[in-house]
Image (cartoon, rainbow, N blue to C red; front, side, top):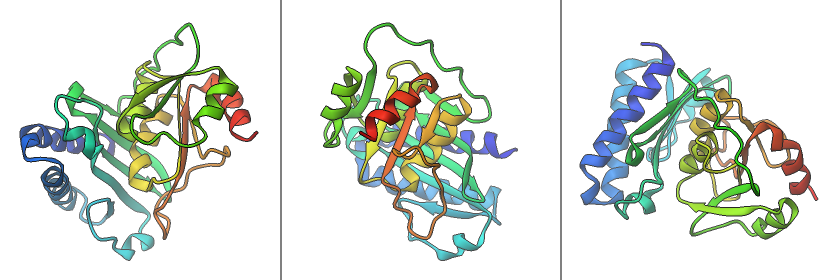
Length: 236
């Protein structure tokens, strides 16, 4: 099984488990999904390192070229509010710090988007630019971006759900500042880039993974034709 298929399979299996145990709540979901993903990765890729939100960070990953970066349950709050579907499972592989393989499962929508079979980005929607934002913690600069772009807001839950919404044609831009780590964005970035979207830091610089400090606070995922105008607005 190649890496792309493995990532998609693992995300799908973790998503199915999470659906089965959803009534037990987010804490159990985080733990059980993490246990499953770590076990399956150890079996399938025993020589690779892993960085998981739900496991102690092992510095050995800094000595490896191949590091799986996983978020066993992205959007714990939304997962705990059935029947919400805006939560995800992230499984990614960074090679030499680049997010080369990724899968984002959206179990509530019965979808797995992955780099092995990238989706074509949905056609542009007429009307104002749609900006995916957190439904509970929109960043402070959202009003500035809305004004600069004459945008409308599309509130939703997890980072993975917001990034995938751009591919799926439900939003045009996902920009985030503050409070994220590598596991929040690695798989979504890999999947979005494979689909042809623009991905970068908010200043336009590249995203690098498997860093000593996994804090990676800001992210831009958007339709490629909007990248210039969005970056200009962000840098004003």
